Image 1 (cartoon, rainbow, N blue to C red):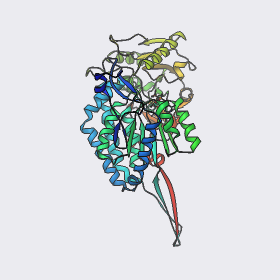
Image 2 (cartoon, protein in one colour):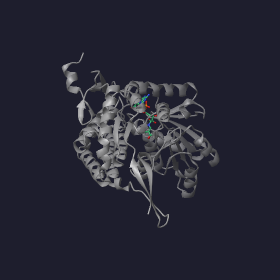
Image 3 (cartoon, rainbow, N blue to C red):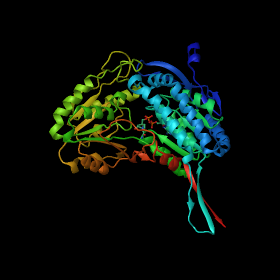
Image 4 (tube, helix red, strand yellow):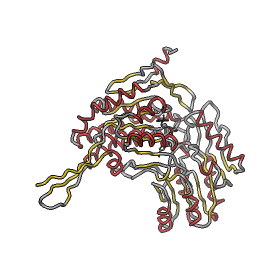
Length: 485
Ligand code: NAD
């Protein structure tokens, strides 16, 4: 039964410019995983809401696509400005629902949302075609047209960044969108949608809440959805690809990873230790697709580097995501917490040596906290070495021969990110060139910046985001027009 308290915590979803609940009148509780408190209820939607949202996006498409690209861009830039003005409110929502620490993570994510909208707002007029040189008797040119209604599905781990990418890229190129939020973290995206809806024509942006089965599936098979863009696990990504194949619609997939970080013997220093921690996304509890979770350390520096790494990690404070002093927050949910602990226990059972961390809760309280955990002695075929854990678990493997470490780094079904640490730039670039991944960083462990082409190879995905080319390739189709003169 819904109580008075629940009524106050209800958040609605955006369909065609209206804020609505689900026809079923059912709700999903959103929890703060650091405190295990329900912080809001969102509609548990289904097919009727998908139908209504797709219809609204379809109705809004004609007008939106006809606007000059720069005009669309200016509206997106205004959304970016609005996010920047209210970034603290957004950061607090992100920290509350994802468990990511406000100081080290959530503020940066809110800022990234503003940055992404401003970037795509500024490049909207790059949606240009070409004129072809067929001589004086023919005028032949191409136009880059929008695709229509985009169906977008996002995960919980970086809800604002990932939703901003999908919305800004799709809308800049003249498409309209129906975006399904993640059940665990819909609140910051709903807030962003509230601000965007004040700026955009109704129906251009529609944001739904609900489960993958009830909302994601009908959205992915809807006949009026002209493009699917999905960020999430490889398993669900395969279902989205099958749905796209059935109707032959273009699809972008940003999926999982088990990314290698290779440290050469010349990089046994504090800056590299900090970079490895950043690349492993330890201050995001390792809940990142690009986490450099397989660390290949050169044998000559294995012990000394590891010692520095463990000492640095010991200095990071784990605690309440909303506490300014926390470096590391909470795992997003009990299910994810259990998965991470299961992997840690399996690593121990298989004979891996735990250097730091482990399955015991590192802080008092009800939240789902896991300390940064490091294994040595794990073999290549073990689950902890080859599967994406999506938690703060790093496997460290010694190496001596360059060709051998590259072969090991590439021996993965995934191909998302890679990190190379060496002072010798020739060695570093040679290694970067040899890695079978979509995004390599040399001597840097930070995140993506708007403009970089980002996306995965192999089972990490199809298509690119963050860049101008990504938006053009993924959210437009080319038409050739040829005229006899
Ligand atoms: P998930 O695949 O379980 O869920 C992602 C989204 O898909 C959610 O909104 C979910 O409700 C929806 N969904 C679930 N089943 C569905 C179905 N049958 N049809 C349609 N939609 C469905 O992933 P998650 O646990 O939310 O996120 C973690 C995963 O996301 C990790 O594998 C991570 O690597 C990946 N990820 C990738 C990137 C990238 O850029 N490559 C970025 C962030 C996260």
